[in-house]
Image (cartoon, rainbow, N blue to C red; front, side, top):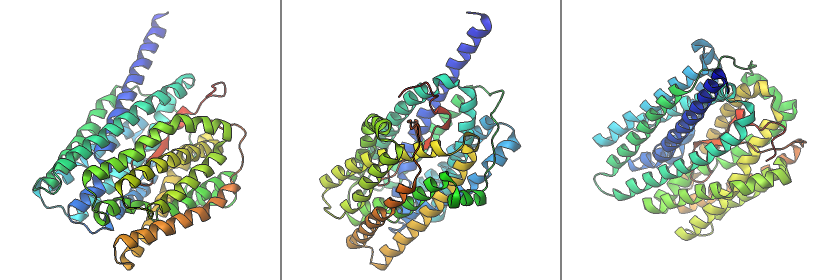
Length: 444
């Protein structure tokens, strides 16, 4: 092997190792920090509805700000530098909440502001990161590498969830309850800070593929007429119905049912572990069924899962229900991203995903406000939650026929994803690793 080729191979191996380390530390941050922000707001004395809104409102703010990502990358001149900037801000945004928790006085506005900044940089980094690794790693290795990376990151995320659950359970209903959240947020900040050296260690690509801008107005025009618009319309309508109840699973368990933190953590872990375990099966189903059929199958399970909250309040039932829901969400999310990858042109993916994140956040907030208003109008007790879970289930079933309008695609393949959020009922919000789309000769 020649010296230049040997050096190129060594650089590639270093980039792969660094990218994996970044994924692990990012996943730990999500598991140990982001997941527990709604529970933190409730522990600090916020009303029940804020347990859901403290996720959805900052998510909308972040999704709006991330529309500026293409301009920000152009201004800085490098997607790598943009991702580094976002990662640094993300590490810092946990610190004010940790300080407030240690002081024992947590203004709700502070939680909303920190969560909004978190989501702005979390979503803002995603398009630039995809462009970066897409140019950095050879096409022939992307599918196999990112598949392995995703599995490692999922284990790290689950470890963060378990660690966070143990910490807050140990100090639940004690004078140190808020301080336990401070420990989690500092651990999340440290985890993200540790990813910075891994990002720095990765190379700067010399040539980036050209990207086409797609503004929100053009995105809406696509929804009206283009084939990819039928995909996006079906996904957004279904997400609207989901968000009527999904953000309120945490306050339902912690406040309405008075579950302790051990039980709450088990329920979250059950959903996420089920998603991880069924992913290989889901991948095979995607290959044999096609993405559209897989999407509808997952949507049916997800729709039934919302209504299942009404059947029983026993922890054992909730754990079992979360396992089934996790399997449904694994199928739905895999199909969702397959369909987006199949129907959106490569040169437009970064911009289209930025617009999709924005409108997904809009329907998320609309749905959550509908759910919050219903809970308040119905008195906020267990029965109020049952009403919104039942209504959301019916609405989800009503939205499924829109999926029949999704065009069929001749070649449907799986794509690895990285978790950018962990939910308690809606599952993780996953982002497709666009750069990892398999090349035609790869058989999965």
